[in-house]
Image (cartoon, rainbow, N blue to C red; front, side, top):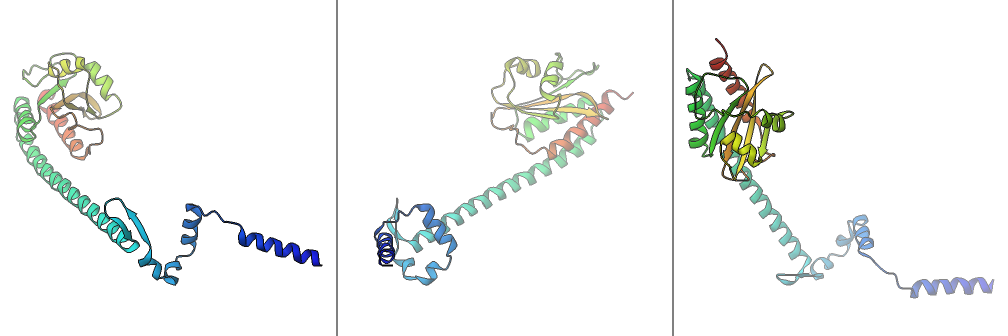
Length: 236
């Protein structure tokens, strides 16, 4: 019996004297499991001091206030960006709505291409506008591509309705008759699920046409243009 008591006392003394290595995970786990810890020890909230790279040593409360200010500032920037995007979208929507009415008033394919070229280069401030048709037409216009771009259509638009980004120099020369340093968008034209060609629009800005661009307005635009081109060029 005496030996058991001595052994028990020895273990107790060992536990009391043994150092417990606290890790960050243990402390975090304890605080998560005990959310009332700082309520039981309110003096710690103001007495704890934290290192700050810009302000030196600050209290826990000051650090919380700083983090809240940074969060509010970040939210304000996000709201400002969203408002700017909303304003741009509103302007684009108004521009497209006006363009649709102008396109519907065109009485010939030439007027249609004139209107599209003006809208692209003047209203949208883009570099160039081209149209390639996979059928021969009698129409003569500077925007019409007279070279065979079937390979471009196959390489870029076989599975997709749009292509955003950069194209190879050989493709640039086929489509635009010159090299273009910026970015382009290729828009496949279909009427009743039949491909009739594609539109090509270029920008001097290499980041302007990005694969992440929203295509809602472009979807309506391409359907209308394909329908009007079919009416003016292929309907007798």
